[in-house]
Image 1 (cartoon, rainbow, N blue to C red):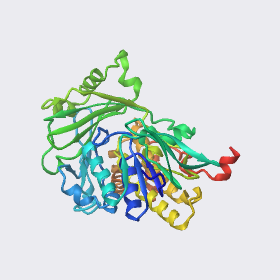
Image 2 (image 1 turned 30 degrees about the vertical axis):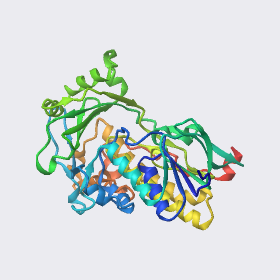
Image 3 (image 1 turned 135 degrees about the vertical axis):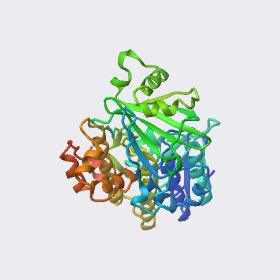
Image 4 (image 1 turned 180 degrees about the vertical axis):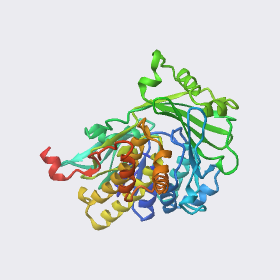
Length: 423
């Protein structure tokens, strides 16, 4: 096998698949090293409208339209007593046939489509291959050491490596860059139901965010084959109150806290598998270093509440690949070249983060903000849709009349060669 490439990609999820598809399409020699064998299970099934642009860029829209994935046009919010808000319809702001119509996906199938698309564009993909370490020369990443499924360990080299390792956050964990959000540290417990009740007509594929006490919430995401992804997110001390730690017991106790969730699930049956995860929110102090660029969840993951994860992963794959292509053509892969990439992602994440913070504040209500400032409704829909790289200063000023909002976190800048040597 060849051991020299233009780019090595660690991880074949949405950020890695989209970045490798673009770079391979440009004619670069791209190697994707994926630890698991696809299709594989993954949480995070709800796409938001602004995934459309990155999916269109890599030629995925026809495949999505030809899939079984449930069409999604809106998100709605439900109070514990079952009162349901008016849906936030994306087509009130965007074209119904393109951006405003998105999908609820089964990630095993969706991620397989993305990885196969990267292969079709010319990327070499090696599944069941574990990356052990980054190869360093003079403080620069020059490749990786990996082990394949047969146990053979080898080295591959490239002028730049993309860390698309997702929650594992391969590079930032090993280099001490990984930081937690000071507030957003939730626990999620979830399962899958078959035959749960759905809303009629155009609302059938809506994402529902259903509140439980103490600013916890359920997601209810309709999927194809009459399946529904449903889970509860809240502070750990709330979900494990009274010493309850079994995921199944936690889940079914919380179902009783929201009448809408209770009535909808009553018509279906759980598959019997229950999952739990914690400490969602994290980010990397740096987006790049000599020979290295971070994408997707390996750079930052915010919170599951507004389903921004896949959009930000695809967006970072798109923007990162374009920046890497330009750098390869220019023969200049210095970290400083990736400052605009990091700044764009940081702006978008921080805008969404403000809305997430407001959502979790017990004194916040979307309805009250929109009642006082009707124009806020459209801007909230924009942010919920993933149109996050715009000036929301007026929206934040309005929301600050109700609740405080956080300052921006220091992350996503390039680590310059001089800074690394000084450290």
